[in-house]
Length: 190
Image (cartoon, rainbow, N blue to C red; front, top):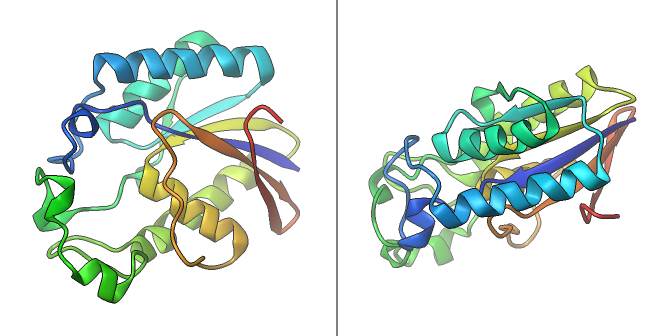
């Protein structure tokens, strides 16, 4: 069995400004750094991970590095854990999403020149399987993004739910990988 602790990055500057990120270089806010360190201390008290994986996007990698400093682990970057590409919505306020999202549904909605959460599901899910297969009998931390974590939760269930669950900044959940199936999500402190 592999125990996978999935964590969303701390608050980014874009989160604080209530807008979509302009791209992969958006950093954490001061609050986001504090959130990451608080999560790191919680993990240090309750977990014993052997590896730390992260999205290549600055806000997730910054979160992972802060966690890694506390846990004495160096983040391993996995490109497939990158956040959903918001295309034409990059830098726009959250309310710039039109009615298409209600018509198409959150899983299928694809911003112009972007990607849908279904696309993220197909990209990030196999990466999670590879991480789990590498760490049977161990515990690992995976730091990514709200959309990625929603897609990975759906992947672990084998399909999409009515609506994706987007976790708060620096929040997360645990998945257990037993043979070829996942169990969870479970609360991090269970």
